[in-house]
Image (cartoon, rainbow, N blue to C red; front, side, top):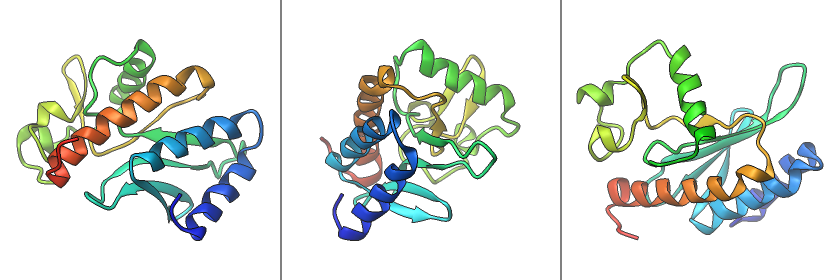
Length: 166
């Protein structure tokens, strides 16, 4: 984390998460920070954005419903070849999604690059790639893949949003 305020924001969140999830979330946040993503308070959530492209790659918080459970959402739409677990996350979201994204029909200017390279896809269903999807029941088993997806989507955003090859 870059500033004392950002460190305090993360430490406050982590103190609410508790064990055994606190070390897992901490490691994910460190990975995001290593790639230049800084935490910012947005309503009751924390979002992670990069100063070079100002796009959100992750979102986290504590649910305000009765379970008060932490959640973590990740933008991994530019990634391909992820595990069945992440394919199922995409499938589950697309099954309930009601709107087709404008980016598939070339009428969206929010994301850079060709639509096929940055939208979530399952069979013939698509979803806007700018949205981070929640990873339910996050565990240490997900950590390596989450880090890989962060890096892959980061490379895409840097190239197509910031004009920087990494």
